[in-house]
Image 1 (tube, rainbow, N blue to C red):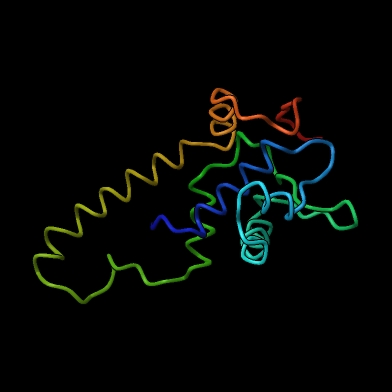
Image 2 (cartoon, rainbow, N blue to C red):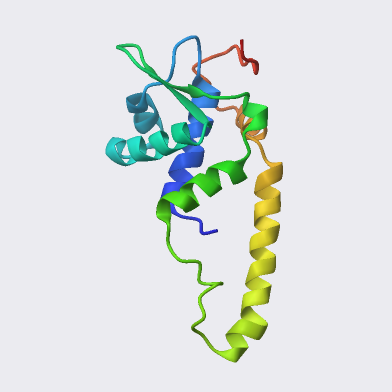
Length: 150
């Protein structure tokens, strides 16, 4: 797992939708404007999140994106896995190239760090991030923060 711009954009986009969603879906233009994310780049990420059933796309003039499930059921690890698949790069930890020192000493440490990070991301939900945003005093466009689906 690498911390990339695409990963940050994806997490911020899902968080933005969860935090600012009201009765209407959130449009990608709104997300791009609030987050400072290039819209063309953002659309690619949003579409992959729809395919992964993290988001749901809503068509029409008032269309946009909604969460596909409750925000307490979406983990940061899920989003990270979607982005990792999008990036499709080779994992350097599985690359046979490298020295004996690298394979024997460095890679096990890096794998341990990566496993810890993924465990932590798997324990962190979009709900947790929304609560942190509220505590930080970040204004939401939707004052009624409900976490349920009908």
